[in-house]
Image (cartoon, rainbow, N blue to C red; front, side, top):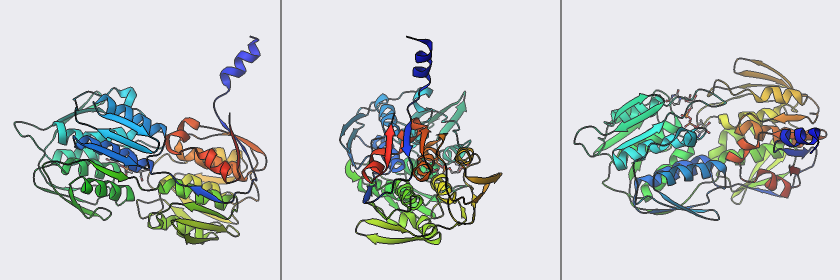
Length: 430
Ligand code: UD1
């Protein structure tokens, strides 16, 4: 083979070729929520019975979690969008770092493992592209439930000390409303002896989805979705059938896709209360929003710049910051976007600038002056939501863009280009 051919074969990474300026129409279908499905899968460790999860998206993160659970002895079977999980023969293993690296949700297994087996060994998940992402609150919570925890050489070893068989119910007050810590403590406390409470709990819809499923497994949880959750420990949980809620971040991404291409679209199914902050910003910047059956119709008018600050739920979600910034690049006037959750979530700025966007960044604040048009360019998505933002920007750009970063995209968006193409986009996976 000639050298040039060898080089080009080696350097071509999987990417999308996105032809800009194709108007979208019709419907975009939203899959089950990735972040919910991952934690519901971890909750399968809490019972010997079978858990049947419906509406589970096909994503590499879900495959990764299935592999982790299988390593611990869980039988995992898939039938289209259904997942059957049975943890009857659970065994204690030390998960290899390679398996948990990059899949932060794997750490959520620590709570159920402790509750079921009385011990767990899980490598620290480490930071990621967007920030350091500590698990201090998870560990503090488990310690107050009576666990002995040792963190050494990047490994968290947790056990229930002495002759005690169960964790002991307690009141936990979180320093910050961490989603993962709330989920970890909740799953550990359901099988603890006595009552527990979590104050300053995360209020994200994924917490409500978890509590709802745990309750249908026989748990006694109230207050999930608010700042204080109370848990009455039970002796055991049973299996159940449960349908994962629609992915609010995918829904938000699609609504922004409609706005950025100035297309009249229906996005469905959507639970509007999960997206109030986003819908408000879309209205503020010039979109008409109407509920239509189980979905939302968006009719974009002239888009003007609006300011956003990311916040824990019910505030504007950090996971939609990059997509919304893509929208603001072609809005009329100025917008200011402030990232308050992660310390390193502005990497998409440089890529948007390469497409002709006018953005100044100071710390975690970006000031965007809308330009009339973006121009297509080769761009790279450095994390899941940045890659989505690059696709959205490419949909409106003049020309054909090459978007790299599909290893991130496939972690969290089910068949994104296929769904967009069905609505009229012209995207090719190469
Ligand atoms: C979850 C979501 C992620 C989303 C995030 C915030 C999953 C699998 N992922 O991540 O998509 O972006 O919520 O909505 O559900 N923090 C601490 N100490 C801790 C724990 C967290 O300081 O012990 C900080 C983190 O560094 C971060 C912030 O709290 O700045 C939010 O983290 P957290 O809510 O824990 O996010 P995750 O559960 O990891």
